[in-house]
Amino acid sequence: MAASRSILCLLMASVFYGCGGATEKKPEKKGIIHKTTQDVGKFDPEAKQLVVSDQKANATDPITGPLSVYGPAVENIAKMKIKMEIETFNAAEGRYPKDYEEFMEKIIKGRDIHLPVLPYKGRYQYDEATRELVIVRDEEDARKSGQEIPAADGQTSQTSEKAD
Image (tube, rainbow, N blue to C red; front, side):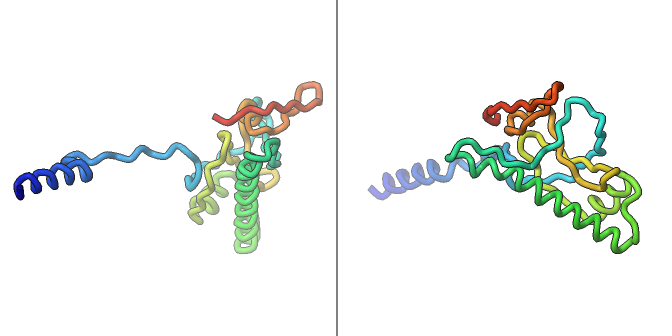
């Protein structure tokens, strides 16, 4: 009786705790929440197929509407953070960063700034002319985000597609 109880406890323990040896790896999360980047490109206003984000919440569904505010809110916060860092640099140095390379070296890398990864494949770029951070997306991803895209004839087009 005691031996059968011991065997039963041993079996139950091996079922609950595994057989030892191999440990199961947890799959890496695929979402963007809590992920950051220091990847900031150089803005080219002449680049084709890129759309500068309008940072507007495009909520059409009352259930998922609050979720559509996440992207524009994160974009605005990141832009304000970089604007503050650029102004702090100006106050300390008496000038603005002279180019993209100095912006990356002294502000992004030098101050160890990590920006949140953006939804709909948004990318950060630094505009040297305006000394601002801009968010760009490919046209297809901008449409998925619900942003209005200027058409060749001056009209705007908007499609409401679900994110991948």
